[in-house]
Image (spheres, rainbow, N blue to C red):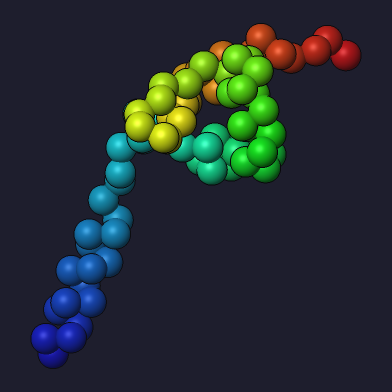
Length: 76
């Protein structure tokens, strides 16, 4: 019976909504843009996508990704 209780507690904890991250790493940004990590690195190195560098990590604000998308949309 204690297993059922602990199982229910885990399910309840999993259903708590998590806040959106303030920053994403290269892998997270690649996922959001549906590209590979190297495409994100090239955007960072070319200064086409804003980033914050903490130590060796490049972190990107999801709002900057949205801005990048808006600024780079092409008319049909």
